[in-house]
Image (cartoon, rainbow, N blue to C red; front, side, top):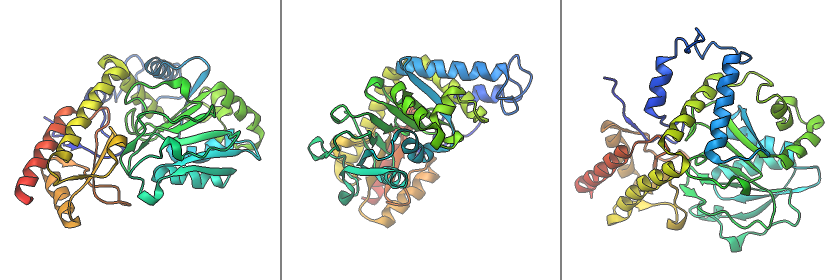
Length: 364
């Protein structure tokens, strides 16, 4: 029997065991194809069927209307920090950015190299321990779009309700919570996400873009390198260049797994239950301290601290020996972090809670 630890890493993250088992079973040769998914041509009918089914399941799960395109790209969410303004920020226009975490900072920095950027609100002075309030937003009249990061993996905050943007197009970096719960797709003009949290392996980026923003991208087509153009990728159905074939295949398996569980409503309930158990333990005695403001706590990335850095280091060492891997906080902020994405099993959360109680008993 294969030994598997509980993987709390922020990404690449745990994948559903049935998906890994199916991929393993068919790794040497896909049924009816006679070759591995790692060898298959991206121009073949077999891969076209895989891509089409993956997109159909993405659309079905999120209820994506026909006036949105679904693109399978590369370069991670970090490349989207540049692709977004290159494609949908017209020259001379202003883009508003909500600075709510470390990844939002990076998005602002890259967008500022391309066009005019206005920071509509920021909680950086508070180390991003909370999200900006509606009353703190100062939006630009006629902004080309407003960009936010829906879940902050480093700081452990998440938008549970979207701010009122006065009708401005909303663009969201949803890398770590897309497909973790139901989504009101019509409220977004563009969503992008690295797949390696809830949707698949590293190497694949999902972009869901509404027709009006895609039309903007068509207007910018001559000014944008082809491989960075949403319009080019949409016209080529994500086959302008060689896509990450294996990652698209795994994405498709994950989408089928999610549908089999009951869709985004079912996985959302499961994720709420997992997070509630962990936050209850953090709040129970005061031995552990939550990092994020309670109203903004992430269901995906649970951040917490202990009284001293040596005690946190001991927690990481002992938890690793106990088969609980990846609990150290991001290198930029330290502390502790449990990432409990879609595929993370509930019994892993129960095991962590038991370990936390025992660690407190021995070191409290």
